[in-house]
Image (cartoon, rainbow, N blue to C red; front, side):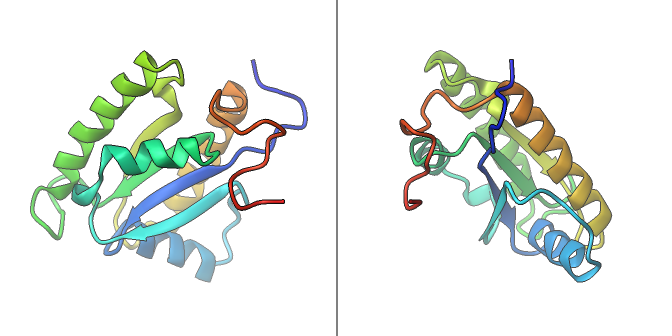
Length: 147
């Protein structure tokens, strides 16, 4: 189903305390992960707004990763559990809209999991490459803000 020459754009919404720190650690350790991953730091995945995820797709993202603290270890108590419910609801909305709920996934990481960050980034990249471009991707394949 994937498209030859397709270069995905994946937005990774990462909580400040754990997932973003894991991505930072991966970089400090010089661990390789795909250039398709665009990391965006957010205070907590519990602040996740479905509208922000939909806006990412409308702006040309082919996939969205939500990366938060380990289950039961959120710095804001249950933020990552709220986020998981929102991700599940967003998957339903994306499926109903014809975009595909499989284009969004949630991962749980601790700040010390730089290796795991690189692994899930590669996993998400491979998954989105298999799916091909988002049906919402602007004509010509460029994302908003790219030329």
